[in-house]
Image (tube, rainbow, N blue to C red):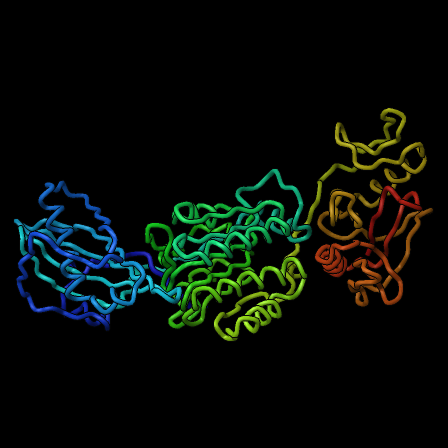
Length: 515
C-alpha cells in the first residue's frame, strides 16, 4: 500500500523561497515589507495564548515582541479563518537568531465552530525589536516527508492477548498493558462531545469490562500515543475531535499527525484494533492520516470522509458501538444503520474488516499451547486423584481412574506428543496435541476415535450454541463463543485432522486429534 507519511517538519526559513512554492503549492511568498508592531495588539476572544518554544535564550522583551508579532500577523493575514473558528491556537517556535533578527515559525491551529474540521496554517517571519517582516504564508499547511519507514511486526505477546480478548471480550487479563477500549475527546467545551464520550465509555465497559475514558485535559497527545504505541490489550478506540486528512487535534491543540505514525516501531495498540475517528476529513484525500494509521494494521478503520456536524455525528459513533458490541451486528451494518439514523449516510468511511466485532479472522489464529517432554510424563496420585504430570506440572486429571491415566501416557509416548494445546480456556471445549509441529498419525490398539471429513467441517449456530460440525454430526460445542468455534475449524483444517479421539468418555479428561 502506498502511504504518505511524514517524519520531518521543514523549517521554511532554511529552504530557498523559490523551492518553497514547489514544495507547498498553497504557499504565498510575501514581499519583504516591514510592519511596525504596536505596543498593544487587540485580538478576537477566540485566539488563545501563544505556545512559545525555543532552544535560544530570549529576553522577556523578545518573547513579548514575538507574541505581539504573531497576533498581529494572525489579525492581518488569517482574519477569515479566525472568523469561522471556535478557537485559534498559535504554536510558535523561534528557530534562529541572525544578528538582531529572530527567525520565527508559527503553526496556527483553527477549530471550526460547527464541524469537527481543523485547519493548520503556517507563517514564517522575522522579528527585530518592534518590527516584523512576513516571509511566507501557507493557509492550508501539511508537513512533508523526508524518509518513509516501514513498521515492524507486533510482538507475539500482543498477537496472543488480542486473540484471546476477541474470543471472549470480558476475559480477565492480568498480563498486557493498557485498557481494552478507549473513549476520548479533548473537546470539553462541546457538551455533546462529552455526553457521547461518556455513553460510548459505558458501552465499552459493558462489552469489555476494562475500558478507559479521557475527556478534556486528560485527552492529551502524550496519553493517547502511549496507549496507541504500547497498549497490547487495545481493541477499540473512539476519538471525538477536530481533524483533517493530515491530523487530529488533542488537548491544548497538540496535534497527532501522520508524521507521528512514521516509525519502524510497531504500534501495539493500533494493531488489530477497531478505530473510529469522529473528525472531519480524516478519511479524505490525500488520505495522509488514514494511510499512516493503516500502515500499522488496525483491524478496522472508520473515520470522517467529509465535514462532520457537531452533535449528530457523535451520535453516529454511539449507535455504531451499541449495534456492533451490544447487539452483535456486523460493523458494516452497524455503521450504515447509525449513519441512516442521523441522515449522515456517506459521512464516514470503513476500511478493513467489516464483519462482527468479536469474530477473529480465520487466517490469523494463534495457538494456545504448552510444550512437554513425552518421555518424562507419569501417572501420579495427588490427594486421591490420578493425574498425568511432568515434574511439578500436571496436565490431565482422571479422578479415581488409574488405568485411564496410564492409557493417556501410553498414547503420548506412542505418538511422541510434545505440545498440549487448547481452544477456549478455561474449560476449553477443544484440546489437541502435536508432534514436531504436525498432526499425530497412525493407530494404537484400544483407541476411542471417531472419523470425520475435515473438508466438510464448519462452525454453526445450533439452538443458540456455536458448534463445530461435520454435516449433521457435531464434534465440539463452544456455547456462545462464536470466534473460538471458527478458530477450531481453522486449526482442524490447518493440521488436516481426520479423527477426534478420547480417553475416559463421557466427559473425557483427554481429547486428541489425529490425521
